[in-house]
Image 1 (cartoon, rainbow over the protein chains, first blue to last red):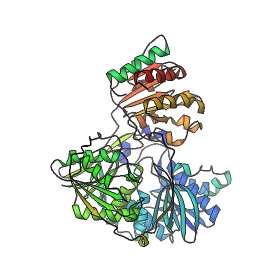
Image 2 (image 1 turned 90 degrees about the horizontal axis):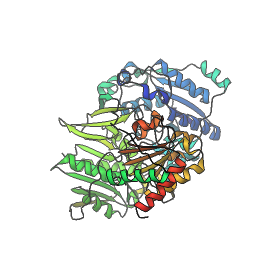
Image 3 (image 1 turned 60 degrees about the vertical axis):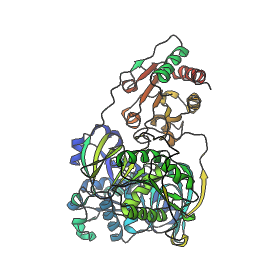
Image 4 (image 1 turned 180 degrees about the vertical axis):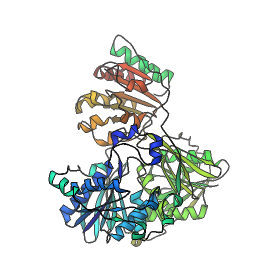
Length: 265
Length: 324
C-alpha cells in the first residue's frame, strides 16, 4: 500500500492576526511558517495507515524552497520521504490548478492507494483541494473523515462526521480522504526522527517534469482572482456596563436591554 | 440571468442556510429566474418549500440513488440542472455538505469557486463575492471569471426570507441519471446525533463558556441558561483544550465561526483568536470578573461579576420574563 499526504505550509495560527493585507498579497507574510495545523491530522493518519496495513507514506507539497521545512516536519513525524513540486509558473494558481499540480505529482511518484489531506488551510480557508485532486485523478472522494475503519480488498471504509450524525461509507481504492480533527492526536517527532528529517533530500519536480503546460496553471489560468484584501472592520460598539446591588438585579437589567431595547430574545 | 440554488437537506430535514441562499438569490435575480435544485428520495415537500421561500421553480431529482448525499449521483444531477437552466450563478449554502458538494461540482465542471462567502453580487456582469480568509482575520474580495460562477454562502450572513405558502411554481421532476451499479460509493450506516442540541452555526442565540467556568461541571449553569433561551452552547479554545467540553462546541479561529443575534460570553477573556470566530455577532454580552478582559472592548453589554452568580440569576430571570 502507498499513502501520499498532500500538505501546505502556512503561517502559525498564533501569527495570523498579525499579518497585514499587503504582506498576504505579496505572498510573504513575514511570520513563522509551519505545516498547516489541519494537515498534521492527515500526516498522522498517513503514518497510522502504514503502521496498521503496511506500506509507504510520502509527504507532498507545492511551493518554493522554504516549504522543505514543512515537508521535513512530516518526515520527523514518521513519513518515509517527501516530494516537492515547484515552478515559477505555479505561483498564484487557483484551487483547481493546485489540484492538477498535486494530481500530476502523485502520478509522477507512481500513484497512491490513498491520498490524504487536512480539512482546509488556515490561510486560504477554501477546503477544496482534496475535492480537486479526486476530480483530477478520477478517483473516490471521502471528506469529513473521523475514522478509517478498514482498508482491504481494494476498498476503504470510513466514518464521516455530518452535521446530523456519523455516517459509515465504503468506496473503492484509490481514494482521496480529507480528515477532520476528531480522527487522531498528532504525535510529536522524536529526537532521532528530527535528525533523520534534517538530513532528508527532497526531490523537486517542475512543470516540465510533471508534463504540465504552464498556461494551464498560475495566475493567468485562474478561474477566480482576489481583487481586494482588507482587515475586517470592527463593528463600533460602546459597552454598557450593567451595575446593580445583587446578581438578580444585574440579570434583570440585562434582560430588559436584550428583550425590550435590542429585541433579540 | 438565472440563478440556481442547491437545497441542503438530510432525509428531508432542510438546513436553514438553504433558505437564506434562496432569499439572496431572489434579491439578486429581480425579475429573472431563481431555480431551486433538490436531490433526494420522497422529498416533494422540500421542493414545494423552496418555492414558498422564493424560488420560481424546483428541479427535483427524486430516486433511491439520491437518498443519501454521494458525490457521483449528486454531481451528475447538478450538471444536468446547469445544462438545462444555463445559470449565471450557482449558489450553495456553506453548510458542511454544501461546501463539500460545491467544491467537487465546481472542479468537475471546471468552474470558479468562491467558498464560504459572506456576500455575493453581480458587478458589470461578473460575480463578485466577499469571503473571510486567514481564519477570519481578513476579508478577500473574489472575482469569479467563469460562467456560471459557483459560490457557497456562509450560514446566517443573509436574512432568512419569509415562507409564503401561496407562492406557486413549477416542479420539474427528474429521475436517476446513473444506476446504483454505476455508483461506487456505498453508505453502509448512519447514526444520528443526540437530539436537542442547537447547532452553533444556525443558532440565533449562543451562550459560551471559557477558562472562567473552571471545569466540566462549570458548563452546567451555562447549559441551563442555553436551554431556557433556546440557545446553542459555545466554548473558547481554552475550555476545549482543557477537556471540559468537546471540540464541536469551539468558537474561534480554529473552531467554528458564528454570527448569532446574541452571543453571551461567560468567563471568556476574548483573545483575538476567539474574536475571529464571533465578532460578527449582532449583540455581544460579556460576563467576566476581570474588568480589564479584552472581551469588554467588543461587547455591547458587560457585567463585571462572578459568572457563577450571574448566569444562574439570568436563568431564573429569563424563566420569569420569557414565561417558561
